[in-house]
Amino acid sequence: MGKHIKTSMDEKVIAYLSIEVHKLDPNNETLNKFRSMLTDTGYEIDKVLKEYEKTKAYPTHYNTDGTWKNKSSQEVVWP
Picture: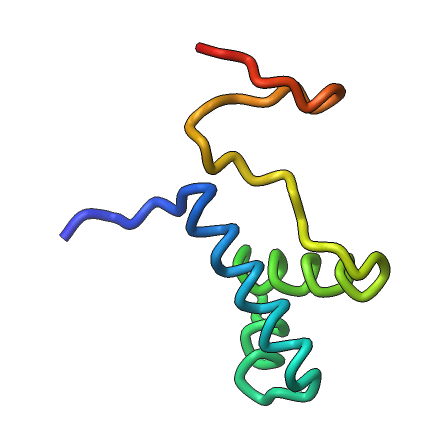
C-alpha cells in the first residue's frame, strides 16, 4: 500500500469536522484525545480550535480549487 499524502481538501475536512464537533461538545473525549496527540495532526487540530475559539471564524487558507493563491492579496495565481 502506498503512503497516504494529505491534500488541502483532507486538511480542510479534518479542521471543519473538528470545529463542528467542538461546537456541539467542547468536552468530547475523542476530539480532545486527538487534539492532545503529539503529532502533526494533533498540533493542527489544536491550532485550528484555538484560532476558532478566538475568532469564531472558519479557516480560509485551504487551497481546494487546484490553484495557488498569493497570500498577501488572495488573488488566484495560475500555474
